[in-house]
Image 1: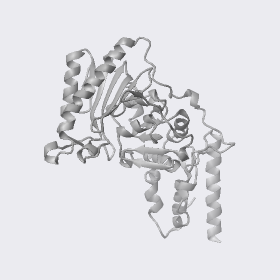
Image 2: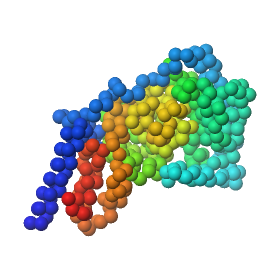
Image 3: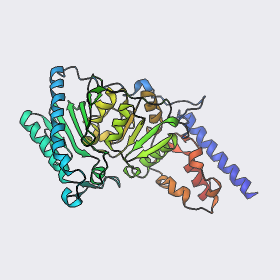
Length: 390
């Protein structure tokens, strides 16, 4: 009798929650397939309102200068290769590996490795920029920022994926971006070991080793192959809960490719989505022209374009998709109101597994089977009700 009353109370609570959020205009999204059931009301923000068009150079951006700077970006990539390749698959001692500690970052980013190769490659690129374009700004991962407010700013990540580099895995890259008045208009992803170089240039089709590329994504989230560097890059709470929802919605989550995952999406090699967080400006600026010039969509988790001016607002949260349709579906999950004010939602997976013999054992797949409603995962609500009462 008690169990029947508890079940009825749980059902009533969930139905009330769903009704309230539907009335507010939120859409139900089934994490198993990313679909919006018929009859549910979508959010006011539509696909036409979002930033998923190719990069268009600002009207006052000189096309001749743009081409000149694109050629110079190739020179920078060549210079970085000369510094990085001698360290490839060398011993820890030869790499001169150190740990860079950063406060207020995710678990993944709070202590990251840096090598002699990282520093040598960035120094070489900065020296070339200073020599050729002394009035330009530089924003680098290893040596900081100069002339950030210049019209032209070069954004450098000498080795994106240093963890892969130090373990001999060729899934890293040198990232070179050129920003005009804060907008990424040139992007290079250079994988020196595999001799692969992607170029994105505003207003033009992206290329891989000089040949045009195009994304080849699926139509729905439940068909999609999704990449993230690691689950540890998502802060507990809002970020991790939304990432978990994405992980449940797609066909297969993959990990560990850093910038190379974005190159795979742009090239149409079978990857459909990249979702990441806590990225530095140097981690994503070069990716923007490459993805968009190949027909893909890239933005922050709210659909806002990625730029120097928007970096603080975007908080390093990046979503890249092979097409606008996937991008819209992913944003329906990632742009929902956050969960940060609910302490018991900070680690839903741990909460789900904490009592194998308690009431939650009756609902082992609650989080997977229930929809995302108004920014809340109903499965998490169910777990709270089961443990503490409605």
